[in-house]
Length: 232
Length: 116
Image (cartoon, rainbow over all chains, first blue to last red; front, side):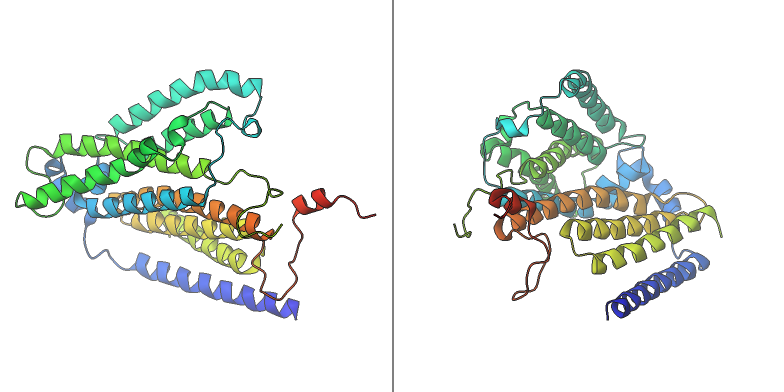
């Protein structure tokens, strides 16, 4: 019986992969209906940034990016609502690793500088808000593991502000351009670059905040302690 | 058959392996990892397939870039949920109600101590 189910599952997965492979082969054989890279290269000057990926993310398809930030914020809020707030100075959370502590003093400033560079580099070479946010969150995780208290991660005004900042500013720009008579999310001519820069900066903070909050919000209480819904 | 198509087919293979693990494995963390494997496969298919014209296409690359960050956040949320589920139920698998849980959690064993 068990062998039979494994065989069935293997067959199902092979069929799935085969079908997917067939589709990929079919798509690869047919010519692209639109020359997207060409179109992008023609319109790159109008986007306000020089790097095509950043132009796609924050100008041509900024609606997607706006919704993705929304998804991130919702994930962060859901994660925080799962957590019991424990003391950030809980000695269990600290690793008294002197090597980590020594490394941290070198790495944290370097990583902060790197995040800033990535954010700035996004305008004309690979980089941007998402990479910078990830690096910022990683340095935050390292500080957290090393036991550096970060009070702004407690549920409170600062945490809410940090989580919502990116999405709010993005949405405000979108609505403002719509009210001014343009299309929703169309930047007014001449203001594209500064607006994109502002949005990227607040996005970096919000992305880092969401990822860090999700890391911190994993419940740290021990299984022995009774919780609500558990019978003692 | 170009090198980019090879990436796409590697993505297809990852999707298949991930699907198998997602159905087959019991432990929730392993399920989550298998699901992430499927996601990585989708990213590979997107990026690999889009390069078949010879030059990289920035549109799928931008989609995958944001997709990776969203996937990381979703994975973190799933880990938070799994830990919460473990704290509440003491189980690491999705056992059907009425059946014995597959495995007793280690924390319980510690608390009870060896049976006398």
